[in-house]
Length: 472
Ligand code: ADP
Ligand code: ASP
Ligand code: MG
View 1 (cartoon, rainbow, N blue to C red):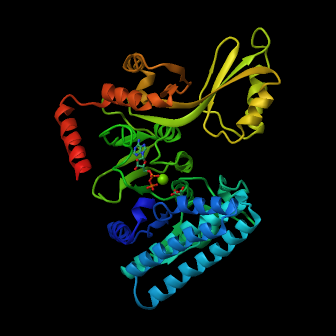
View 2: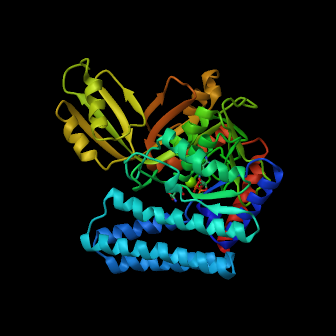
View 3: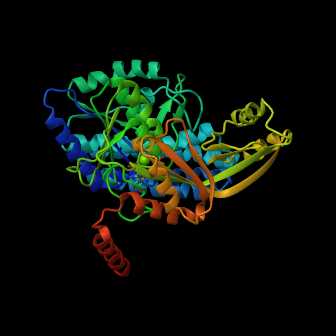
C-alpha cells in the first residue's frame, strides 16, 4: 500500500491512512500484514530541492530557514498523532534527522556545491521522517507497526537522482528483513523514493519514485496487489488539471498504463509497471479520501467495455530537435550516428519521426541539449523548437479501429501538428504540437471520445460550481 504526498500531507490525512491500513488488515485475517510505503509529506520534496538550490548559490541562511520551517511542520504533525513517551521519542527522531540535514545543507552552502549525491542525501530526509511519523501514528491507533529504513531494503546502482534497483540484491533484503515482519502480522512502514548503493550511500529513484518503490517491494514480496493510494479516484481519461471532469478508467492493461504514465499521467510513475509486469501483480490506483471507490485496476489484460479510446495524456514543455543530413539523402549509418549522440549524453528521446533527409525527435530533458546539438552539427544541420508538447491517445482499440485515428485528427482541426507518430504496438498515437495549444487539443479530443451524450447539463453544473467556488 503506497500513500502519496497528499495522502500524508497532515495529521488528518495520516489518520485516514491508519484507518485504510486497519481495514485492509481486517479484511484478510491470518494473511501477512500489508507493507506500507509512504512519500514525503505533500510539498516537502519541493521545499528540500529549494533548500539545496539556495545552498548551491551560497545562501546558507535562507536554505536553513526553509529547513527550520519544515522542522516545525513535521513536529506539529508528529505531535498531533502521538502522545506520551512515543511522542517524545518520535519528535526527538524528527529533530535529529533535521539537525543532521541542517548541518549538511550548511556545509553545502559553504562549498557552493550540491552534487547529485548530496542532493539525494538532502531529498531522502523527506521520506525518512514521513515514514517514521506514519509508523508511529499507526502504532498510536493500536495497529502493530514497525518503521524500517528503506535504505536497508532497496539496493540501487550509483545513478544519483535517478537510481535503478538491483532486484536480486533487493529481493534478498526483502526476504531477510521485510517478509518476516509482515508474516508476524506487523505492518512494516518504509519511505518510498529512496534507496542506497551496496556501500550504503543514499540514492533516490527520481521524482514521483515512491510508486516505483512500492512496486519494487511488492514484486520482491510477490504480493497479491500493489495499491497506489492518491488524491484522485484512479487513472482518469485525461489530466484533471487540463480537462474539466474526466472520468475514471475502471480497467487498464499494463501496456496502456505504461504509455499513459510515460506520456504524462502523473498519477503513476511509469517504472511502477515494470516490476508489476514481471511478477504479473495487479496494480490498483485508489483515492485515500474516498477509500470505498473501486479505483482503477491495472492487469495484464483488460477487456475494453465499449469501443473507443482508453484515455489521453500529455507531456508538456518538450523540445523538438530537427536533424537534417548534410548529405543529399539519408546515408546508411546516419540514424546510428544520431542516436549515438543521445546515448552519449544520456538523454532519452520520446517521439521520433523521419522523412527522406531528416529525423525529428522530442526530448524533455534539456540539461545536455547544447552539447548534443554541437555534436550533431558535426554531420547534420540542426534546428531546435522549444515550448512544444506531446499529446498521446491510448487504447488497445487503436489496433482494430482505424476510425479512431481519423476522428482524432478531425478533432484537432486547425491546430498545427508538428509531428505525428504511431509505433508498432499500435496502442497509442502521439501528436507533437505547440505547448500553447495543449489545452485546446486535450479539450477537443476529450470531448470527441469521452463526452457522454447527456453530459451537457453536468458540464454546466460543474462550471457553476466552479464559478461559485471562485467567487467565495
Ligand atoms: P501522489 O502524491 O499521490 O503520488 P501525484 O500528484 O504524483 O500524487 O499524482 C496524482 C495527480 O496526478 C492527480 O492529482 C492529477 O492531478 C494528476 N494526473 C495527471 N494525469 C492524470 C490522469 N490521467 N489520471 C489521474 N490523475 C492524473
Ligand atoms: N517525494 C518524492 C517526490 O515528490 C517521491 C514521491 O512522492 O513519489 O518526487
Ligand atoms: Mg506521485
